[in-house]
Image 1 (cartoon, rainbow, N blue to C red):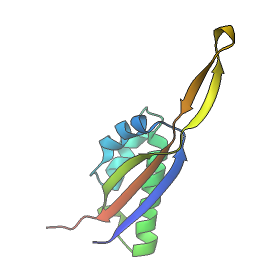
Image 2 (cartoon, rainbow, N blue to C red; image 1 turned 60 degrees about the vertical axis):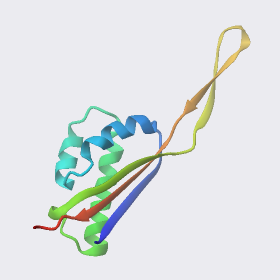
Image 3 (tube, helix red, strand yellow; image 1 turned 90 degrees about the vertical axis):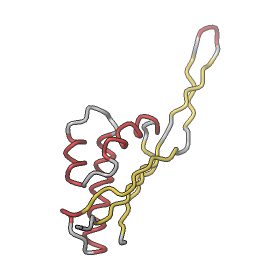
Length: 114
């Protein structure tokens, strides 16, 4: 089975928040997934839609697959590096803020009829 993939790395949203949105589109056709993401209020919907469009374009251009038959075979969110920032607090102390990042991977494949 021919698969096409796309990856977005170092997205500044925590993986937990991105996974909530990714779970909604897993296994759906590309067109249905993009329609769902278009009206999602979550900030993570924008980069996920971008990666899905990129994977679909890779499938069309590199493997000559039909865009109408594509579906999201796998979508997974990995944790990227954590960027550490300090926030001043009372009495000269500092708190550590952990700015989490995500890597989004989408794999699309052609759905066979029958």
